[in-house]
Image (cartoon, rainbow, N blue to C red; front, side, top):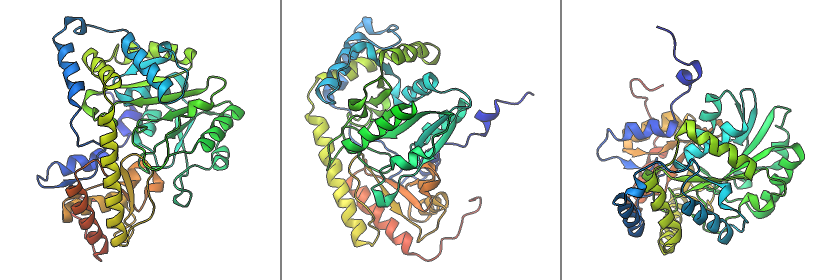
Length: 392
């Protein structure tokens, strides 16, 4: 039989999902591995979806770029909250931010192109770049710099084949929030080298000690693409709804790409997303405050256990140094799950820079976080962790 597509067959599985699948075989495991809000979707959003289900207008195809009323609502949100003058024509609605990333990269990069991505990054950036034959080029995010990128280090990695720079603020897995001056510098850098800048702002609603600023505020010539969605801020991961905001010529291409990828986004989910934007925002604030309390509690535990390293400014993640248990973060995560029944994400799932680190999700209950971190600290202090049969 003829072989499958080589790149698709050889691409490694997403590292967070590896632990996720293992953990679900352990009924009483503590889940701190997946970035999934443990809040229900707010009631007014669910009710809007229920009304849409009963209205046969929303039983059919929608335009490739999404329903107009949602695109208007997103444009209004970008003006009022992000400080950007955006028209609905610049908005494309996607089946989750994941599909938005696929659309952006298909619009920007071709086989042989290089795209700069964070050295600690959501694994799906690299996975999709490799699937389309482009080359991901990581740039470092150093702990001593608050996991913020150094523009000079980025510049040294630019070649004639570099097409775009990806940034993520607030960051996953670091929780870093980029200040305005850094964003201005990065946009200027992309202008100087004629690169596109893709700003992943999916966690924009979850900031604690510094405001969220959109990179597109500093775009003067149409090279910044903003990616965001509803999964994190509105606890809508299962609804699969995200969006991109681009300069008009890029939005036109992204809209065309929707047809072969998904044709259009689920109509009922689009009506739910519209209700999320137009409805009360106090639910978003309540969740943000809950994440802040969990972050502070987690930091207190890490300080008490001698594992504190830094304070994340946004998102709902913590990177924890587990080199006391081993450098191979995959092996450490598997052993922690096996010995303590705590699931965390291996740092190396986010790039080679994550070696010796694990990511802890704060999108779980306070009880789970408290107990999980206590067990993790106990595990790191234990002198020997024998590998299980089959562990590499």
